[in-house]
Amino acid sequence: MSGKRQSEKKAASVTHVEYTVLECLKNEVDLTDIHRVLAVDKVSKERFDKGATNILKLIQNMMDRRTHKLPKDHVDYKEKGE
Image 1: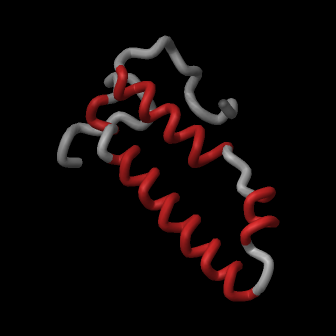
Image 2: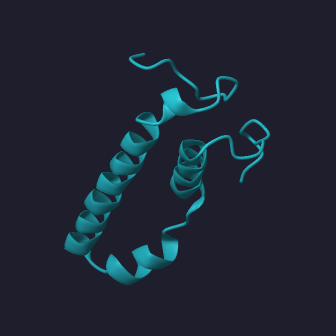
């Protein structure tokens, strides 16, 4: 993972691992190759952009639903309902 995040500790819970995997997918997966294959004209580029945006929103939603279960010293920890 990139160095901009706090230095990760051991897995504190399954939810902690899920959050970290989702964060990695969101921040570090490069879609350039699949974009090159799937987005070959104006219409397919618009479809790709919309589909990729939808998936990014899903990933962010999944991350947001886990922040209250992160270790309390995690940089993204939030109390439930915040």
